[in-house]
Amino acid sequence: MGAIHLSQEQHIARVTIDDAPRYNAMSLSMWLALKQAFDSIEANTDVRVVVLRGAGDKAFVSGANISEFDTQRSSQDAVSHYNQSVAQAQDAITRCRVPVIAAIHGICYGGGLGLALSCDLRYASPASKFRMPAARLGLGYGYHGMKSIVQNLGPTAAAEAFYTAKVYEAAEAARIGIVNAVHHDVFAHCEEVALQISQNAPLTVQAAKQAMLCIADNDTAQIPRIDQAVQACFESRDYAEGREAFAQKRMPLFTGK
Image (cartoon, rainbow, N blue to C red):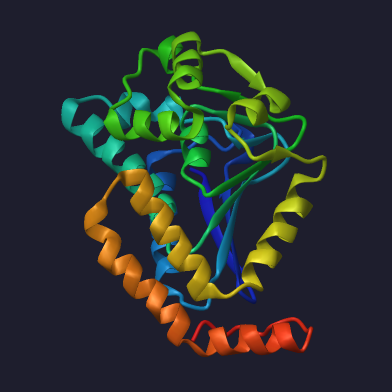
């Protein structure tokens, strides 16, 4: 029931959520496979950026596959396992070593919205629609799920989205911070952004992501680790290459070393 596809071209990994007939609704097996895909990316030092999208042209992710709730969320233990699997997949994206770009076209509801908000950058097509329908389904959201929504939208916009379960058009989604911007050819735009990131110094980009995560979590215990990552940038061959390329007015060729 549905699949997660992982491919790589040069330094760009592409992850596709694929259950187009069901508007890419996420089953439990898909959440588990998504976590595995990002575990694989984490271990692949050749990857510098990830593009995440839904299959087809109707949806990014329409939410959870409600048809399997009777079997996969029918007891307290089953609900706990399901929620843990979702949280682990989203956390693997948030904590991914490299930036993750969400290319959103069509429906992005519920778990799909939570998935998108786990990404570093989010771009949408004009046809995209966003909704947090939990209040219409009777679903509860715990601390970690709500934290992501509040951090990205702010408390007031998060409250409106959650309490009303309203549908946001793409332009309004950009205004309140659900997405960075709206582009007619969102997939081409995301590929362009991914290429730009992949051509930059990998150690610098990764150190910056570590620092931003630390700030978001208010986790000052991670500051020494971030300082080490910054020092590694200055000690790298890429630092010398960047200076030489600037002086020679050419494109730098970074290796991540």
